[in-house]
Length: 238
Image (tube, rainbow, N blue to C red):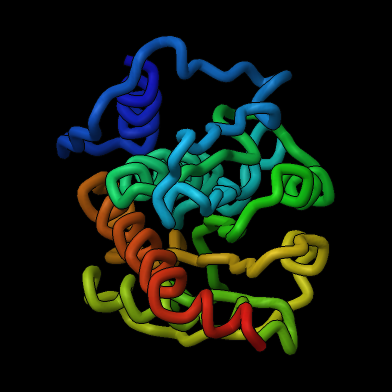
């Protein structure tokens, strides 16, 4: 099946023998590089509260833009981003949410276009997935960025970080504000997740493990779910 095949491909690329078994979908779920942005799963005629929300998943980098590399230069960030994004879609689907991608394969998408995809599809939440690198190989942990003074995004970032740390036991580097283009140009609560340091050998060893990546994806999904379940209506009323 297409989703299982894609995740398996990226597991091979990042060089691990561990097994991850997401649920499968039909080949009709295939999205080409030219029409990926048109994929918009519609809610049922009587949608649940969760089905009314559309989560836009943005796997960072892609195509000619590899992102950062692992400390040993063997692994590219763009592949980890996409593998984690595919797992996140599975987790959100299991929780009852609809989701779309800014890219679903190894293609280059300009930053402004990523935000446009989210805005044109009326996304409820935008989450950009990345992995980090530092000058020191000792740098480690998870940090999440939101646009300055964006209260909704800050609450979302805090919920996602809390859940990732709870489930992964990774080091928390906190939530931080930044004027990243994808955060500035999106019209909904938006965050950029840095899921760990590829420049840190012990942390990269974890990131090579699809089981660990799935834990990161689960933390993101649960953070989104907590935000929408406990804070969305209250914040919308402000």
